[in-house]
Length: 266
Image (cartoon, rainbow, N blue to C red; front, side):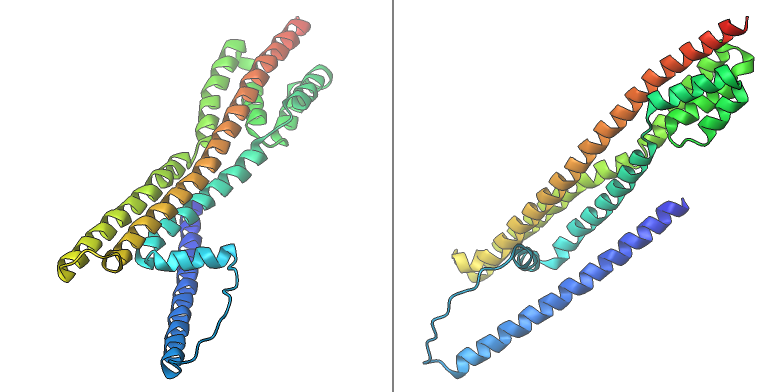
C-alpha cells in the first residue's frame, strides 16, 4: 500500500509538472501570436517572403497537444504517465525475478548430496526470484514427506504467480481508458462544432474547424497512448509466461532431485 501511495504521488507530481510546462508553452505561443499580429497590423503593406523552418517532432507534438485542447489532453496524458510507471515497475520486478534455473538446480542438488537439506535451503534463501522461493518452501517441508512437499509447492506457486501478475489489471484499465477519453473528446468536439453551426446559421469550414480539430486530435492521442501501453502489456504477459514455464519445469526437476535424494538415504 505504501508503494502504491508513493507511486501515485510521483505520478501526480509529474502530471502537474507537465501541466505547468504545457500551460507555459500555451501562454508563450499565444503571446508570440499576438505580437506577430500586431506587427503585421502595423506594417500592412510590407510583404516579407520567408520560408517556414521545418519543425521537429517534439515541436509538432507540442503544438498538436495545445491545439487539441489541454482540458481533454491532460487526462489522456495522465493515463500515459500512470501506465508507463506501472509498466516500468513490472519490467524491473520481472527482470529481478528471472533466475538461471539450471544453475540453481545444480547447486541445490550438489548441496543436498554433500551437506544436506540445511545447505540447500541456505542456497535458496540467498538466491532471488520465485523459483528459489519455491525450492526453499519445498525444502522447508522436506521432513514431512514428498506428498506434503508437492502440495506446498503447488500452493506457494499460485501465490507467486499472483505476485508476478500484480498491477497488470491497472495497465489494462489504462489501455482501455485512453481511447475512451479520446472518443469522449471527439463527441464533445462534434457537439461544439454543431453548436457553432447553429449559432452562425451557416455551414462553413471556418465555423466547424475548431470543434473538429479537438475531436480528431483527442482521438489520435488516445489511440497512440493505447498502442504504447499495449506494447508494454504484451511484453509483460510474454515475460510472465516465460517465468511461469521456467517455474513449472524447474519444479518437476526439483521433485526428481528430492526423490533421488530420499532413495539415496535408504
